Length: 84
Image (cartoon, rainbow, N blue to C red):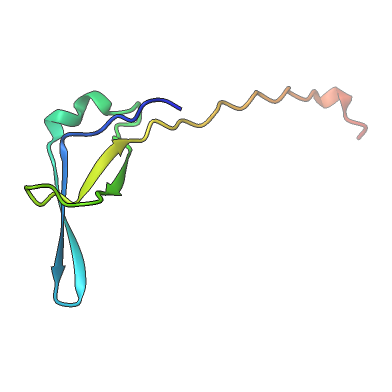
């Protein structure tokens, strides 16, 4: 497993509003440009901190670098090999 890459351009503060919770999010795009994948996305996991920071940050983001394994190509079938 590779080393975690923390995304410093993602900021999340959890706020309790009456009877529900709101996650206030800010994303600084300039800081994330280097992590854009071939499809144009930045995939990341959002994790809750054990304690809020001094600025009230309650969550942090870690880059998700998972990529599906390439499947081996299936051999082409030839029509002349079919019994019908």
